[in-house]
Image 1: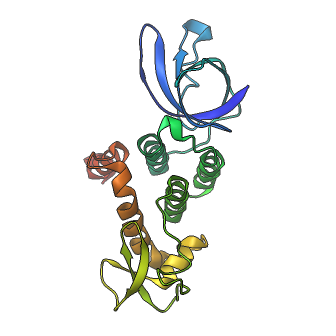
Image 2 (image 1 turned 90 degrees about the vertical axis):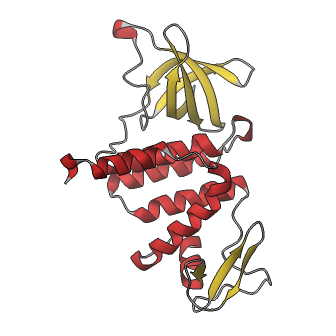
Image 3 (image 1 turned 120 degrees about the vertical axis):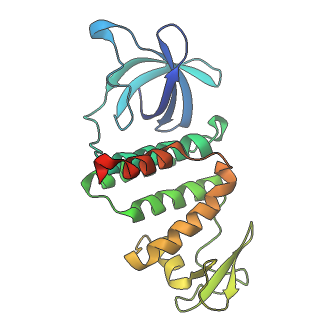
Length: 230
């Protein structure tokens, strides 16, 4: 039996769905699952943030998923935190190809969901994005600059695409404090670091995400603009 999480589903054919999964030991896997009907339907558990156990079969890039059961209670992400969870799911689907694997992301994802359920903080998203970028080989080191000198907390740096960080003169929108870079690397971001960290992560993820807007981000903005939330 395998264990994993649903990232996204969409209708396939007949009573089946195409499921983008994140699976322990496999990473990103696309599957076809039959929903069934009545008491045997798995529709209620084939949902995001629900730990699942199941069987995989088939040798092509599109696997068959069967014997699906809930592995444990769903992780309780409610309200605005659920949008953060859907953001993580969308990042994984958009950035990780099926043939990439990304086996290490399963535990990172699971731990992030558990942490967000216990108490949400924006820094949790930044740490997840950092792990994803490292998995994709897109993240330069946050410990040294291009000259191999240690990143200094009192200095500012600018990012050279596909290369790394170099010294910069003073604070600007496109400059990052060494203090923030080190805090991001060591998972100890403070409130004063979050704006810069968010800007850096968006910049680093842009080549992977392309020009297509993130649906999770658009849904959150729509909710916040709704009169019912004011």
